[in-house]
Length: 174
Image 1 (tube, one colour):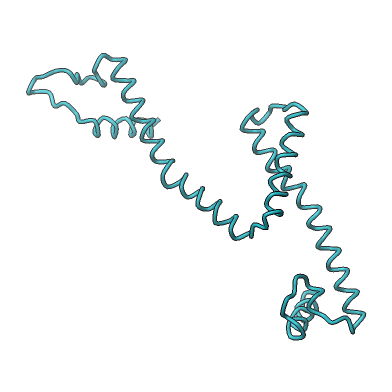
Image 2: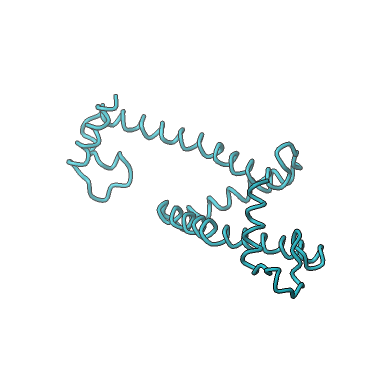
């Protein structure tokens, strides 16, 4: 069956490949058997699109609601309907402004890369520095057995980078 559709596509492109919006535009309509197969193909694609969209909405809605209510939480009916309306509105806007799928992939990749490459490491560093600062504040200037306020030459006072590195190691060991 796949070989048949490949041949239909190739022959359609050879016949008329200019200004074609759908597969039906590639044929002139002289062969009625091919037109029947093309109409069936268009109907199958329509059914596929109509069945995939609710599944995608379900996955997106489930992920958003799990962030808000947790894995076992039950959202209210109005919030459930509101997310449906928002999701369908976003899809309608994308279709209205005729966003190309490549543009959406580029924007999603750019945002994801920004989060993974910049915001992730920065937030981990800032959280670690915050924990070290809280530990120093709680212990009155001491980390473990070292006194950071001691001025003796025998004691080596660790730098801030050493304190953060040792704290990160202790977090990774836990």
